[in-house]
Length: 222
Image (cartoon, rainbow, N blue to C red; front, side, top):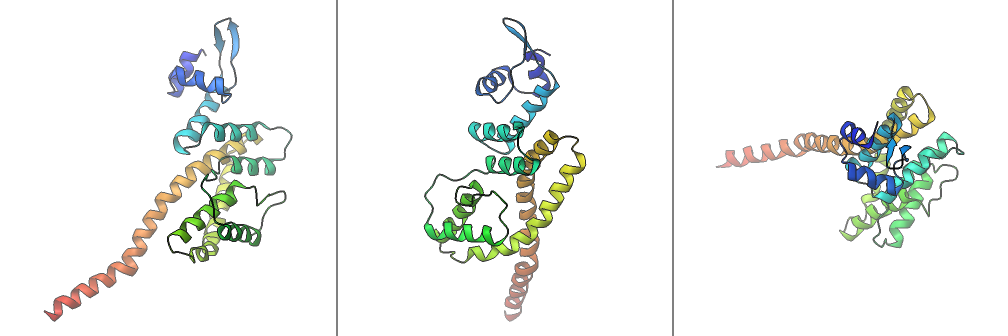
């Protein structure tokens, strides 16, 4: 297909596709003339992946490039590639972090099983966690980190489901890695929505009834 058809099938404007080509996010097509190139289904698939990373994952171009580089690496084991991709899509904050939060994040990751070759001090995931703890401290919530143990138990169940889903539907190494990227991005968004629903239910159970009883008691006193 030519770039116009690629644009039509993907829904991505031609100028944007050309930008992705220049940035190395999309492989070059096969030249059929000095000014024309042919694209195939692999380009369409990669283009959709790029859009998912940018639109849903809200990743920067550099983060998308890192993630795609990890996907395309041929000399790494699947396990290592998945770790590299997770690091690429984990956006480390640029704001300064307080030392206590960094130490707490590193200690937590070490306690709950860091993986071989996982550099805690340089990890974007570690910095993401440290940023959360740092922000909590700045708001007077020094004990927020006590929630992390409960989070781990819930996340392990989710991680098992994620890996099972990816391994069940994938037919190649690239399928596994790409599915993990998309699953993580979409899963993060889904978990935010589901967490909001759970908060509403738990609030109604613990606070709503109490509020209703208190209101009824006040009415009875009148």
